[in-house]
Amino acid sequence: MLLVQFLTESQERRIGILHESTIRVIDGYTTTVELARAAIDQGKSLAQLAESAAGADQVNYDDIASAGRILAPIDHSDAAHCYVTGTGLTHLGSADARDAMHQKIGGDIDALSDSMKMFRMGVEGGKPQPGTPGVQPEWFYKGDGSIVRATGQDLDMPDFSLDGGEEPEIAGLYLIGDDGQPYRLGYAIGNEFSDHVTERQNYLYLAHSKLRSCGLGPALLVGELPAHIDGVSRIRKADGQVRWEKSFVSGEQNMSHTLENLEYHHFKYGLFKRAGDVHIHFFGTATLSFADGVQVEAGETFEVESPAFGPALRNRLAVLDTPYVKVKTL
Image 1: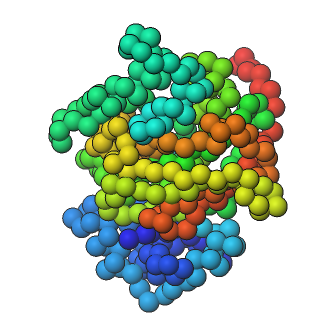
Image 2: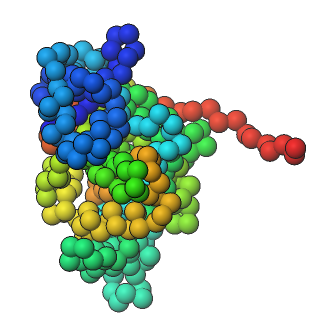
């Protein structure tokens, strides 16, 4: 099941079930979070409640998307209560792309770069027995809900950025219940989007490089994630022509960590189990245009597509003016 949030022509929020190009509108609920809270309260799965609440009204996805009224598949009424985080070096093959920014060397473990050491740790201990913790992954903070961009919206990077590059990834979408229990609502395709040139200057700049906007959606895939996911990542020039294209794979079959292990190492912190909060957690990538020497220009469009997630995620790169800020003494 795919769920989509959107706006009507009168700018009212709605949520519906997407099938091919048709959205069947859900009655009685207007947001993903509202629907999820009701499912928790009623002891139902998200899919069960969505299906039972879907009414007769139908709208065309393409019409809504062309009008710019598709929303991200999850959000919070207070953006400060939505965490956007992620993990890296989790995909088999991703170490090559990441380590190319630092140092590609082999040999004994003491001679490996930090990236390769982290990747090796994941391969050796990222898939423990269910219900037991494995090795910790790389972890990073991206921002709050204010940085999330829906399909069709610009991915705005600050003018002090040295690069704006895509990272096609799958994100887990979560809601924390009133008792502090994390609930996974499902998954969405995303463009985690980072400044790889800044990161390449020094690995300790990773935290800076991740503080950027990100693309998410357009649909929420309800239920379990297939073990193997196929997708394609593209860069389109301003005239719409494809400048760069590459296939990517994800899902546990192509990862050095289980999703359960990645989730455990995020939600083991009490800070991330605050009742009512929303979490968007990116699971890592194996494909970067940056690794192929591509530097995306403002006005070009990122396109991330995977059949399992319905329509493609499309975001144009834009540059945001960020004047120098001087703190005032009060």
